[in-house]
Image (cartoon, rainbow, N blue to C red; front, top):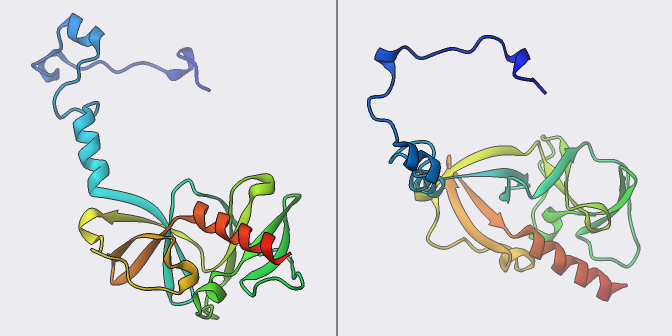
Length: 196
């Protein structure tokens, strides 16, 4: 952490380039922002409504969106140990930093095939015993989506996933499906509990 002494000389703004309008001391103390300034909550709200940042995940010929803070990490797939008498979409269990994590194959759940030309990765969601991981094709990427790209209604997908699709976007010629991963993993956990 840099202290004020380490910060070096401070720049001063010449009087002729200083802004003409300044807040009155009482307005500054009460926290009233200048209209249109960086601190203006209305400007922030407008910017956040016009663009969304999401992680884009590819699984076969499908493209999914996850919230920026939904996934914990992306890594090369460790060995996955299959479990008998479990649904086909459960690849098995993997040891991720000392935690035993179920590995979900959305390609199987969605009825598609992985893209063999792309390197597989594991995207881990959640913490400790609540972790789950998805097998994806290629590295996830950060996407900035505009509100105008949102489709009026999401396209149909496999019944295993349909109820978890919350929105769809047409971005750069591809349809991206936003999934509620928390609900998806809860549902998969319940199915696994019933199967065991």
